[in-house]
Length: 239
Image (cartoon, rainbow, N blue to C red):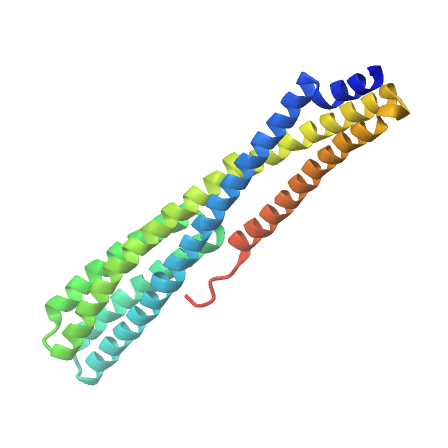
């Protein structure tokens, strides 16, 4: 009958169907980007927890042993170069941690510079070492430093990819979907007033569908906000 046809037009109008399709497309893009961000964050944690943090601690410990052993044997030159390497390593780890906390590109660049300075100091140290134990420790530190550098470069790239997705996808989709959902709800409410009681059930169904979209968008935004807060504020205490 005429009332049923009117109700179907309310639910299936081309304009509204296009709006719903756009909302759904943005929602799917948001979910895909969010999944990729989560994967990148897991990769970031793996680089830090499995390589960067433990290698940093072991290199610091080995250089301290070299320096103390050299002092004990009165090898002042070796102790000096071990101290220089230790200082640059400390700065490399400090600026690496700063980058992990605030994603400052300048901190990442400074960390890589200090890694290079550490390598130079280790070369000078090796040229002075005669003691087999101290040489083995220093060679081990140099090898670990190479692995540390690659891991840090990888984590920098991973974090930059993650942040680009957050900025270009997650932060973009939310503001786009919000007015679309408002437009959809307003449109449905207006048609509810025009169709009368006989078609109220079908229109109410469409309204509920719009509300579901809105709730889903709000939940996704809240989840993203929680994840981003953890990404940017969690201390790297074990470095």
